[in-house]
Each structure stands twice: as C-alpha cells, then as structure tokens.
Image (cartoon, rainbow, N blue to C red; front, side, top):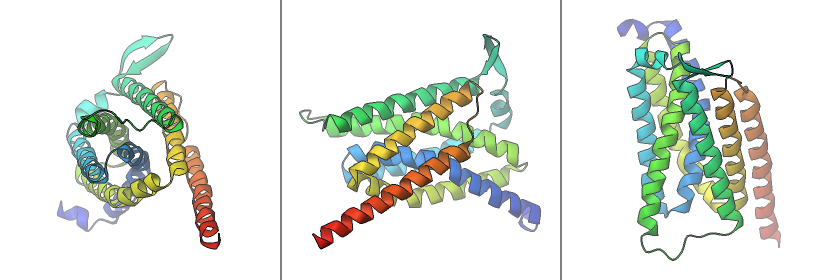
Length: 240
C-alpha cells in the first residue's frame, strides 16, 4: 500500500481512472436528477443520498469480486452468430429500462400528469424512485467497474478512484437536480439524453459500441445551448 503513495505511475493511474469514472458517472447523475424531480424536495434529497451511497457500495462490492466480474464477459449462449455474456444481457436490460422510463417520463411531461388523487402517492413514489435507482446503479456500476479493471492493476487505486468519483457525483447532483427541477425544458432535454444513453447501452449489449465521446459531446453541446436559453429567458424577464 505504501509503495503506491510514492509511485508516479500509481498517481497517474489514479488521476486517469478517476477522470474516467467521473465521465462515466455523468449518466448516473442525469438519471438521478430526472428521477428525483417528481418527488418532494426533502424526499428527493434523501433519495439522491441513498442512490449515490448505493452506487458507491455496488462499485466497491463489484471490485471485490474481480474474478466473477471478469467471467461476466464470457459468452453464455449464442444467437444468430452472436455470443451473449451476462454483461451483455445486463446492459441490454438496463438500456431498455432507461428507454422505457425516459419515454414514460416524457409522456407524463407532455400530458401534464401530476399524479394527484392518490393518498399514498408520495410514499409509493419514494419507494419506486429508490427501486429504479437501485436497478440503474447496478447497470452503470457494472460498466464502470469493468472499465476500471481494464485500466488499473491495483484494487486500492480502483477503490480510491471510485470513492473520489462518487463524492464528486454527490456534490454535483444537488445543483444539477435543482436546475432540472426549476427548468422544465432542461428536464425534457435530460430525458432525451436518457433515451440516447439507453440506446447506447443496448448497442453495447449487442456488441456494437457507440463511442461515448460522441454522446458526451452531444450532451455538452445541447446543455450549453439550453444554458444560454435559460440566461436569455432570465434577461428578458428582467428587462420586461
């Protein structure tokens, strides 16, 4: 352990892996921001804390199961000449879940479905938010950790990178969630991103890799345009 603290290679690996984990965590932050926007603010804060804590726990548990994780990439059956592993099936299932969830949320926004009329709605909503966070945390954690295993050799470096990335995700998730909740058009944009991410996960499951750089560039570009739209609306209100 001590030799890692004085090794330039270890620090370089930590910096590279942490940066990669933060980038991969963007998907998780977007999902969390959208999914908690439909419940009261106090519950949303709790759900966000629980969700990110679970993300950290799942990643550390998966890191401790390296041999089993590596085995997940081995094909378990073939169909039409394609070999599918457990990782592929989890990515396909998670991607379809994201597409279905984002589509359902878009429908709710368009139809202005506020979920009124059910006394147990807040309690049920909080429960289902946590369930959905657990499902998507498992999917994102699996992809993230398999990437980490391919980039670093020491489990200490992997765990440190995951912890740092989760802390940064926690710090950024609050402002992102509030921004999404305050600006409906931003929420619709975030939902569109979730559909895009879901398609990318399904494609990965079918062994057709869509470079994440394209997706993150599209997200960054669209987010920048929306940011300027929000500023323009705010300035119009001040001058109006």
